[in-house]
Length: 434
Image (cartoon, rainbow, N blue to C red):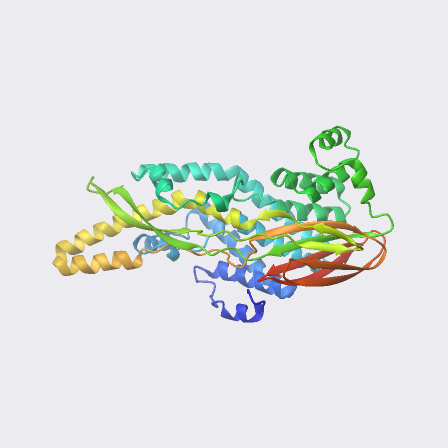
């Protein structure tokens, strides 16, 4: 991927069948790589398969039926024996990429279906997230392990998480939803989603302008008065940026790749079934590095515009892992206690040899589950600029590479431009709506 050779990258992915516990993850990776190749239809098909698997997991979790056999294997091996469960932020991106797949094929109605699904994922996660975290912590306490000891021993990821409040709210998803609603003429729905994006990313000037612009267009006098005092954008600035007889460019910049999860070992005290405390070694996933975010500059007709961050997916990934830690550790506590019982039994029945074999098995099978959707961008940025009528050239630069995009601008035309910035190289594609 870093060299831009997505065909070879796709060929390197494992070809799992639908019975494999990483099948859904492989479909996500396929969908992302086909998307990078501009193969919208194939990306759409892979992501649809992934969505169907998510729905199967949701039904299975509801009835507590299908995961029982796997849990037995996971107790005596590791979490990699479980089906890969897509976290909320990855589910949101699944539908976001589906929306873009349809948008680049000119199917606006299908795109709107996908952004509604993405927004529903965030709404559901908002309702369930804190309860899930509390349940996980209570489970861990019931297993006899102090949650504070887990967080004090675990590597600090606060620098990667940053200031985000939760692991699923994605301003980019809401912003894209607003853009598509606006293109479709649904200004009220667009306004609602722009405001949601602004709540998550309040410093983004492009979102500020869109919120203020639609508040003005929809005659939201009370909210307009509030925004005029709170936002860093004036109505004069908004009126000067109107399209008049021209159009506009909405540029989505996907930069770099999320870092991969790595493994860390922790020694923590646990009560065994014989009511004694022993220190056990646990292997947990961790993000050890953050990705560098650099600005992208768009130049048109002598005017320059800087990109602004709208979501740091690396931060969402790290926050998701932090929130998942109590569940991960509680399963490992059950596992190490079960393995300790197995070791005691084998030592009793097989003497030193049985003890050695059991100990080797326990060590070699205990490893962190480091699976994640690794081809996602580390961050997404946006630029939104008015364009004059006629042939227009957008010059895009990230400081290492420069590329030009030529647009044929007509009255009220909206040009959706996607910029892929991976490995310092810029790749672009576009579609237009009238």
